Amino acid sequence: MRAIEFADLTLAIRTDRDPDDCVERLERTVATKSYFDHRGPGLEDLPGYGSAREWGLDLVNDLREYRAGRLPWDCVEKGLLLAGPPGVGKTQFARALAKSAQVALVATSVADWNASAYLSGTLAAIKKSFEHARRLAPCILFIDEIDGISNRETLGSDYREYWTQIVNLLLEMLSGIEDRPGVVVIAATNHPHHVDPAVKRAGRLDRTIEIELPDIETLALIFRFHLGPEALSDVDLMPAALVAAGKTGADVEAWVRRAKSRARRQRRDLIIDDLLTEIRSGRDVMPDVTRRACAVHEAGHLVVGHALDVFEAKTLAILDRGGATVLDISRANSQTESGIENYITALLGGRAAEEIILGRPGATAGSGIGEDCDFSRATQAAIDIELRFGFGAFGVVHFPKHATEFLPSDIAVTRLIRQRLDRCMERARRLITDNRDTVEAVAGRLEVTGYLGRAAIRELLTKHPMCK
Image (cartoon, rainbow, N blue to C red; front, side):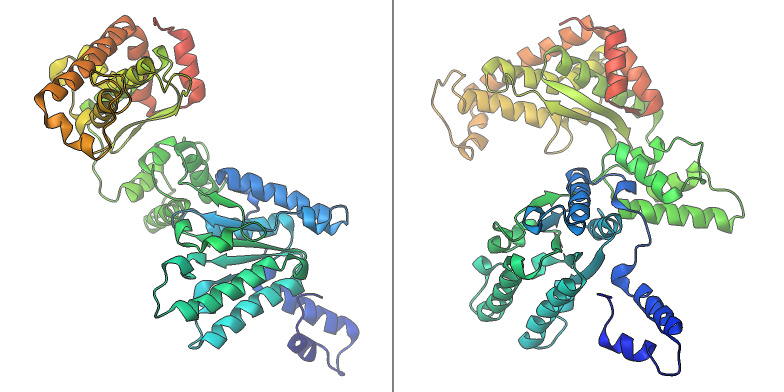
């Protein structure tokens, strides 16, 4: 009944129809309204989303209790700012949440509000969205592109009055919790720092959760979700996830659709190569010799990092663009000179493993490619020890960050930095030599599978214990 508008009544209820016919027509009308469209997966069925998923499932339980009269509205979380890059599924999150909670979804956007040519029309559109949500409560009001409303702190004088009225009205609507019982407001943005700070204050959208790009294991689950239970049912999807690293769920959906179309046009069943072809889009496959070097390199990081208790590795992977180690840095000794030197040693462990296992002619330039490469981070840490942290020959003299960019050009300073890096590199080589069997075992498994999760890493390190 909350979804029925006056026009629906005039169309469905006529004197020449019996009551059952009138009710049936009303039911069909309500079923076509988009905010009761619960097709698609619920939040519990979707892979990924991290802490946003946990927040959403908690909200589902709270809304269930609220509708049953067992939980007062002031105990329910009422606002969320959902941040993340395009394609991570912010809109799908709202749809899935509404389905799981079995409540209406009123979806709008700042672009919809600004479709009017005049300020009065924009203000009226904002009010209409909140009024619509109040009428359908309990429901979720989803506002996309919330960063489209300008931040008053950065406004120029030409548009300040226009945007100030819009922001003030939105703040009024968000603050009126007592006037909108049962309405949960979720706003989405690609740029959370562009959102007016007042929108994020307590009592409004006071909770911000960022949806990050899916990790490799989550990407494999997303591939399975979009493929369905039948397609490639007995195929390991990890190779596809490795090639797709760094991409979004929207990318996965598009690749699966195109791969299915490819197989359909050729009148055959879908195969994993169809997916890999779509993901790579002509990108070259990594040569075997480079793949071997990547596996050894990442195994070197793992062994040295674990031997010195610098970090705990969560995953090791070989991607099309190179190797990757995802880890949790140990904070226990990260502020001491020896702890920072251990960190430098772990950074140099990859290159050390290449030199020891593959021989110096077989070592690659991978440790020095890019501004955030192993060598760059190790050098910066050594510079900080010498010139900023009070552990070097200069004592407690502290050079500002911008000054340290030029001081290493001094020969004496460069010599100190070089000596520290050389000591750490030599230590890394010794650890690789002492733990060669472990490095070989990890590298061999990684080269074959392309991916080692936490359980596989733990198994390898237990089977091949390290010398510290």
